[in-house]
Image (cartoon, rainbow, N blue to C red; front, side, top):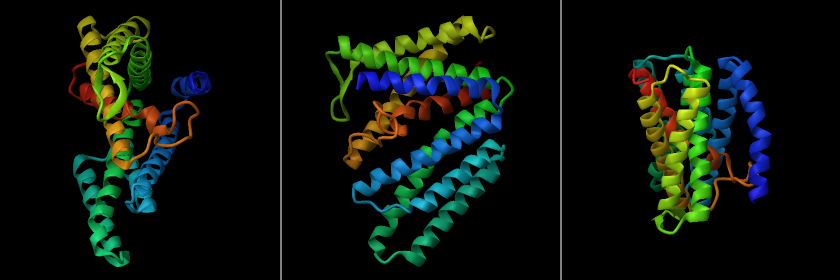
Length: 267
């Protein structure tokens, strides 16, 4: 398992770095769009395994459409109108095609949750890349988030004693969580030294800590959903890691947090 994790990371990292550094924002958006489709497929497959019946095709098309609106800079009224339209179309589809009316509400709810959880949250990296210093934001986001993941994993394995949330994840520990946060802060400070010189010292500490916390919350939320669905992993697409959602669960929460911090002028 450990060897597979390392080999998967080694195979993915160079193409990712090259795409961010030399690719256009639109090319990065295409990568994110592919990740959204895979993530939605995994989410709806987990839901199906638990006995729910989401509208898989509708959710995948609708989720990709919402991602496109966010990337191409749709205003808040347009996004709100699009979301309202999606809800209307979703309910109309169930009205016309559902044989069991008792399943209509759960099917609509799980379909919409997948669109917002996967497509909505995973759209923020491409929105960050579309900004003027987009490369810096993506490299910073990936460094801080993945450093936290790695730190939590290895510190938890070596020093972990006290369980963090045993009802949600039997392997996550308090020591691993603290180690992950320290690694996120360290990665943030290194990012300031290496490629984001304009980031202040206090900013690098507090932003690294904030993204580290949000990344761990995202990880726990995905574990909660998997527990609810009764599955161990979201999928098998990444050897040693499970599904794509198992790999990007932290980014689902840390990317929107960085986006808000940028918009608010905190960095």
